Length: 413
Ligand code: DWN
Image (cartoon, rainbow, N blue to C red; front, top):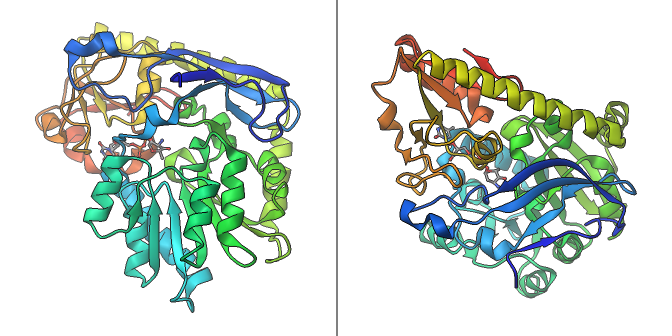
């Protein structure tokens, strides 16, 4: 099968009335870090265009890269970012308190369980757990940590096999649903797993935040879907399921935690209507909102490049802080490469010693930055952890080091 194809119909309503709203050019897959610069001839790039369905308002990629290519060996590790591990600790406690307190029999299943960071928190609370993780390297790591993990992609057939031997009370999927190509087989599988009284809880980046805060770098080939409530309601209703609650989270630039169950099983909270009203008021159902967003992204790009050129003219040394997937989208879209950025530091062992895709910037352990200071600027590629990182890098800043925050407005602090 080819590594890439063009979407010709909406992933939720199957309409062909799709239009392109933002074109980020040809980009390498955002997590396809390079081991060896002598192999650049093997580097691949694919078109990266965001589309809008005029029938159901679902925002989705128009260019689909084969999931085997993207996820079979995966370098993003949840445990690489302490703030996310802390977020998952609270997440597990909240779900346990609200839905699992008196249930020691059934199982918490996580789809896209990565290195098992969240399931470990449920295990500490006494829950039975099972992970489904397609990346061989991560599934192996989780099983070595005694987090029971099945190494496969999720599908309705996988769901049918699981319920033969397990009662599932809660299914969670964090920053995964946006990665799913066949949303209908996925939701059919969810319906099979949760039955009449189970619940499905998923967390995804919120389209409202992406548009309002110009988080264009979170648009990459792994993220096929960009969710607002309106299309989600259309999607789950097709499976006699419904949203009974929705909660805003601050991680990853702003996410929503969506709670789903069988229609009529749990009374719907007011939160659903509140979110729907806000989306309508902001215009997430209008093409003009996205046309303005695309123009704002172009303006941001020129402002960022202007700031960087000013710093280079002052002979400042610029380093990259964090090697997130989104960082590679920003660097490639703005053509900021190894000739501008000296190196990048990142806490994830799997990323250290590699190079960024398309821009070929070397990635090192954070210790590489230890003696940086007065003539140095850190381009904060992991801007979603700004507060934690500014706190952790007090020494760098006390030595006169500056941070350039690229999103939502290029700012030096
Ligand atoms: O959807 C996805 C999101 C949730 O996670 C995945 N498709 C891929 C991934 O996206 P990302 O790579 O943009 O996620 P993060 O968590 O924003 O990546 C942060 C990067 O920065 C990690 O590689 C860890 C690193 N980091 C660091 O070097 N120093 C993080 C922190 C907090 C730090 O202090």
